[in-house]
Image (cartoon, rainbow, N blue to C red; front, side, top):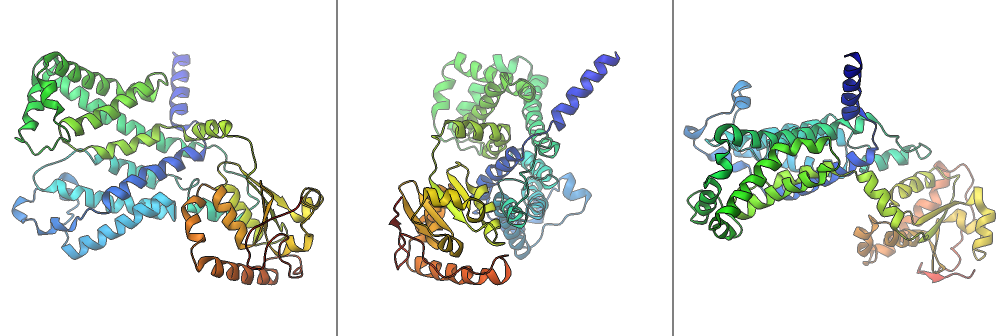
Length: 445
């Protein structure tokens, strides 16, 4: 008995607190909040303030804590704060504060429509996820906060696996699994086998085609399925089986893809054939994906090649944080970073056209094609290599950005020795192979 208890305890602790990499929670946070921000930003909650009080039937949360329905002006402020918090939580900026604001504002705004005669169940799991993430360390990876931390502590090691990145994911997935499980059990509890063997599903599919309910199916296939009794009953059977067995996805890696894809199929099928919108449920599925293993799999299959060699002043207190951030952004591992002070012998052998003084004056980048870039143009070259740089690369070539960028870089580079560098300023040099206007040019080898 004692051995059984110990085994159960170890399994329980492993389920909730087995150390995992921060990548999984960080990527899931980003991909969870991104579609939610896009979905809710156009939504206007202020109209609920104009609904007649005669229809007000507060749910327990609003009733117990006497939460009022605020006026339009207050609702506008609250929804602006919530939508801004969704964006910040997605980006991972001030993550603890932004995820907390998402939870507080989201609970009120998403709960508000439930007080007027009809209680929905498509967004409750979102509110649970909001609160779980608000108490988690979801901003430790794949966030602006992590880049700021890297800039402040350039010598710090990457964060190790920790239980702090496991329990939030497991708790969110458990909540999602219980939602599906409760739906399946409710069907069997109230109707038993008749939910599958009767014409219930066929009647529902026909009903929505004639707009008898407020449903708005995207396609008219439901009517055709209803005409085939066996097809409708198989659809009902698949629904009950998927919902009832869904919690097994928490424990079985073999069943997990089948059940998770089955749950996604249910949500998509309901929207297509019957109309109710459960799209928000789809966003929760990002927490099923082991993003660290996905990243390792992708990286292992990418061709091993260096896109650019970045040569920097390792004694500079401004260059070291910059390089630390660039290392975090180098997701494809295509940038080679070389310190002038530690590896000048290597640099001089590989790139004989470069001088040590020029490399100390400006950050240099040497592309795989031999082209040499200096200063601001090194960042433009990096924007082609770093995945995040693809978003800003067109902007870096629009006038007057290159002109302003080169002058701003020059000003910062010339002044950095006064406060950020341990070594005195090097003489002013332009990078070898870089023309007078800063344009890229091929360097000799």
